[in-house]
Length: 252
Image 1 (cartoon, rainbow, N blue to C red):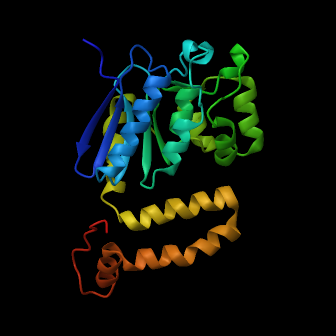
Image 2: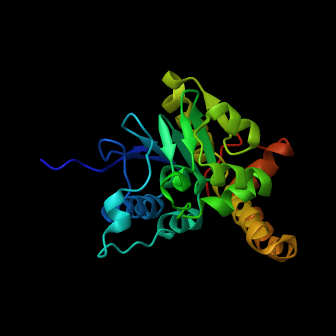
């Protein structure tokens, strides 16, 4: 019986996408396509946040060598990270074991990263004569600055999670046996939050990064209108005015 490469669990409005390509979640055309479809289908199905985890010992040890060397491979290395970043809802990656090369780039495509204190993480491609192929260089520049990003990519080392938390790559480090529970709680808080506001925060932040503050400022008028029209904002404003003691977000 063929192994199910992706497993999806619906936890209220949180969708958990579990990577399950033994032994090390190596990336190839089929696996990348399935991750892409899982992300797109989850959002279409009403997910208000996404959590990406691994069911295996490692989050992902990077690309399958056959994927890189096979002349018939589509080799669209940026496809996955582009899909992840275009997703409007918040995304969280939970890193366990090794997250190397393309495995780390999957996590960098998410909005937030939670990692186990035993995880070993790095863009290690230079050790085999390659460079990070899926956008990891430029996304590290965004997270840690130019000098640190060059160090991480040029030396190809494996780092502990605490170091990368200190540098700004990772948002939260937790004990290994608490990783999935902690990451789920992290992502669940987002799925229970004001969905419209979170979507607009993500959009404005990404525009600011990609096009600059001036473009982000121009988009603010539209974002403010969308947020103020949402049921979440109306509920929150009523709460502040003492008219609504519940202030329960509905996500619209």
